[in-house]
Image (cartoon, rainbow, N blue to C red; front, top):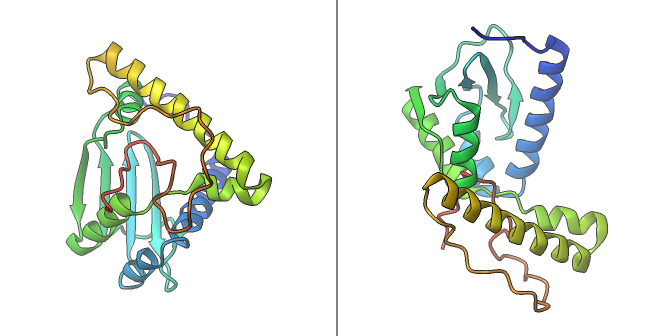
Length: 192
């Protein structure tokens, strides 16, 4: 039983906003767009339960919502059906189980994106409110995320958070080129 479905206009708007966000993050990593240029025109469909989004790679190495009749070259299906279990996986910082079907090279490139591209939320926030306030907000967010991971790990029997405690001492703003300070749960960065 699928339950109530959102109106099509809402689904379309969510897909468009998702594409804008993904492209914003991708444009910050030149190698990401270079990898995707090789896949131009290919379609990847991400499926969870009855919800899905099909993304088509553009000639610029970004994403666009694929036409409704587009056949996917790659299907990525999240196998965990429970929203609660998915949230627990994300809060632990793990990746969900995914069934992969289709183009091997497109799958490899998307896997590289997941492993190496991160959203530097502090940098984006600094553009709006300045460096020092953005750094403070990011530090508080890291502390809250670490506490939440520890809480979930302790309550669910998962692995404890491996992050060092966040210091209350004032710190200098991060230098350009450092790793992003906030990572999306489930999308660890394997870069040194």
